[in-house]
Amino acid sequence: MDPSPSVCLRLPDEAATLALGRALAGILADSARPAALLLRGGLGSGKTTLVRGLAGALPGGEDAEVASPSFNIVNVYPTRPEIFHVDLYRIPGGDPSVEEHLEAAAENDALVIVEWAEHLPRSLFPAERLECDWLPAESGRLCRLTADGRRAYAALAAVAAACPGLVVDG
Image 1 (cartoon, rainbow, N blue to C red):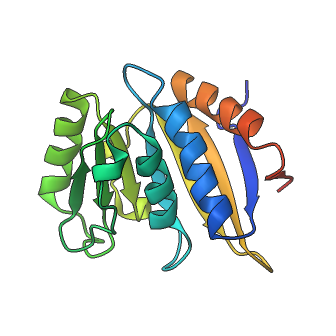
Image 2 (image 1 turned 135 degrees about the vertical axis):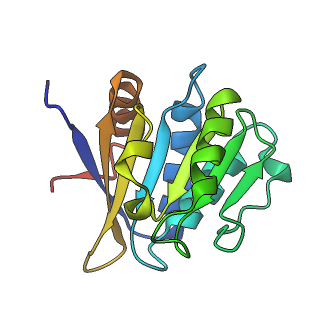
């Protein structure tokens, strides 16, 4: 098996990004220990929109006020499973509290979503994760999902099956 299988999705608009988030909610939450989601992409690429779609699709999501937690470092949403939404935009050199938040998320079997994951030290990468890279596109967005870990491999295959109209080569 390829050590890092990936799927590339074309997201033509905000509605498609929200739909991918909803699909990921059903896939990632369907486990006692969900795979983490690491997001990398520029400002305005769709990272927080994806999180909004994901959180809104989970039980308790109607009470989740999803916003980029740039000033808080982490927002915890009252979903099931609980979401720890980490944003590393303002701390590219790292912050000691990030490790504490990731440990707390693991203890609570929470779903971890990290925006600006390029600033997360590799030593803190969860073993089970989907890495989501937002890529340049002529129109809309391209999103490459790469899996690491057995549960993440299964999640990646489920994403491809749930979103066949969005899958592209590349």
